[in-house]
Length: 401
Image (cartoon, rainbow, N blue to C red; front, side, top):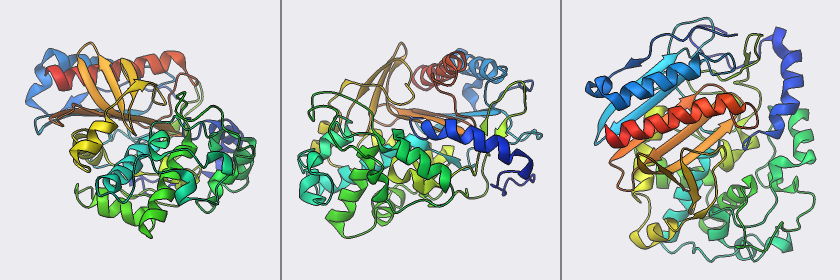
């Protein structure tokens, strides 16, 4: 790959490896070369503090692992004062760290964006939390017709996850760079029977946020992408955020890798088109934009007070992958209760990237953590435990200074 990081294609010599790797990665699409770690850099007057030192140490320990990521960036924002902790490299063979302006795949953090769009419409009474799938999308399976928007946003719908089916896996592997029409994603659920009575249980499902976006389109007569720009990206000034269809990332970007010790990591940046996950996981953004988004989202900056209060009614439920501390789920947002305090946000993982965004309820203090590798409990328990320490250290740095 060239040093300017513009090439997202898979190197020809790695195609066979990526093909076999793809079968495994497809199953963890949204859910789901050892290098010495260079010194962590922090650009803040807080970098001398104990909490920030602990964050730097946690990042260094994660990077020292042979099954860890190539690079880590954590952006801590305390009342508008940013501290950037970036270590490792964004590109194998180079010494360039991930920067706050680099584009990365947000994976399931995209669900918070679809939540922001839907809740904005709820605040204007163009959608209602008790609106049903049957009302807005009568062509979808009759078994789903009584599921409400609130249940979709809280993953209590009982609708099966399209990304966990054999049909989806086969279609993705057959044409990874050619995504289907958005409604087609739901057709990979070959058995539409609900997994449980809506509202009775929590189960994370990528189908939920596809349906949310389709409801947005039905209610507004515009594409989800247009509504995302109108209701979230433009008002919040998120100029580095987009929802592409293809596999290309805007420049500059940090390539995503799959650790494969003792072999060199595999570049999986362009493994599949973003349209395969769309509103459930396709958003691309920068650490700076992710920081601005979570601060506004947590404080209710894209909705009204009544809807925001409904969003912040939590029940037991973990994000995918789990965030720091005790996880609880609201409407398209998670609560993370840690020993240093509570933040609200989302996590995400996809081949090549893992993300965490969290903010206090008033939006005054926040942390975002991005790595250019997919690390989850299913992939590596120990590596994920080290990543969780980074998350917790980031929260402590944001809340305790």
